[in-house]
Image (cartoon, rainbow, N blue to C red; front, side, top):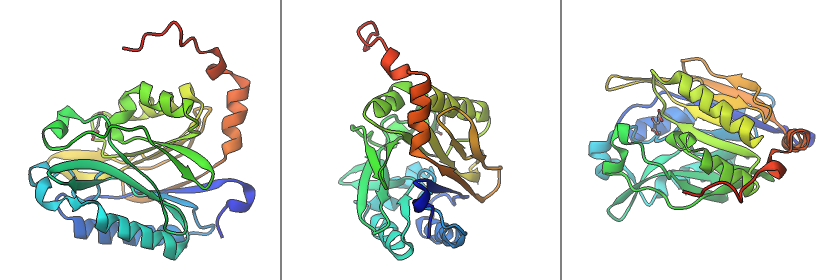
Length: 271
Ligand SMILES: O=C(O)CCC(=O)C(=O)O
């Protein structure tokens, strides 16, 4: 049994290392960690994986190793979710659609039904993403057991407009799979904290660990509450980071400081 009876959601972030360019090895490794996560007592209700876990940033080979239509990834996530009766936000994977490659998140409920998918909107030029990937075009909110979760991926958190739009659309949680490296730990923690405080929403962020081609990824996966308090934070090693979140706290914080009612959109510029 999970946490359902208390109207709370138990979240487990799978803070894993990723082997660049090796989708099969990464899937097998993640599955081991996910098995460990669902053996915990109480069992988490929701698992969240890191960004681009199938290929890592093997961008020069990405046309050859991205998952065609995301089919293999979706079948695997759906079957794990159904078998273990757990919701999964499957981080993101490189997905091939025709000649284009997207950085795409898939989410499933406990019955293995797809809840939604989201492709990263903001491509990260520092890693040449825009040379190899195609950006998504849609805002996505996932219904995770009645808890509305806005979708974002890594670099997306540098764009406060995205989290604000998702919050205005009803999201009470921001989900953030990432491959965020040193030396920008300060940016990662500060931006995530800010997105939580300014939007009075949970932030659930799963970053990878380990090194690829001279880049060191620091983990520090975070679960932050709508008051900006850290519920759980990962180390720099592989681990499962867990925490309990409650939709009522979002309403409580939004009731205490009515940021959304006090906005002045008629004065802000759009562009
Ligand atoms: O914005 C950053 O500093 C890191 C972003 C990133 O690594 C990514 O989007 O993959």
